[in-house]
Image (cartoon, rainbow, N blue to C red; front, side):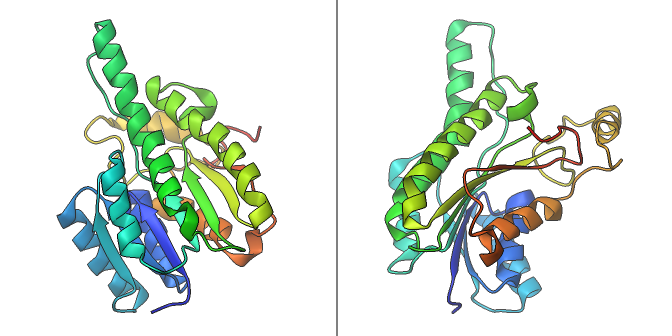
Length: 248
């Protein structure tokens, strides 16, 4: 068992799995949280092999839009302090928007998936955050800064305001709160079967570096914010987008 513990929501695939793997390589024990048991089991096996530490990674199956299920994570943490909390769960949820009822359902679903999951998990684990030295990291999106995603953009933008508030509250306790805002990242489930070759090329062309992002690019930013070198960084939004949106 390592000395430090990280909890990563949405840790079964894509960016979340890359983050969990990176933190495990850095010596942290990692608790990955998600809704799909088989996906989480595969992630645990893969990450454990990559970091070479049997038992370093565990999984909790939970739907974090449900307060009762968020408490399952608290039970899995037990008496340990949480050194790093990475709120990565979320995604773009489509829906029928031809009626006001459909619009309401669509917006609520995106808010629940991207904001409520982070709020409930953070509030559930807030007493367990290590003081001093805890890290809370929220995964946002370039869509929060430039729009284009409708309800998804609005939900991710809400994380920024909440992060500023949370950083103000937890700063006196030496707990930092930051946001990582990825741009276009290939090799994730985000687009599903919606991505076309033309869409991929357009997004790559919008970068300054001429390539799509990879999950490890985002994981590297999270690992920095989770580490000792970032103790003086809080209340910030770190863009990882290849220059698609310049700093603001």
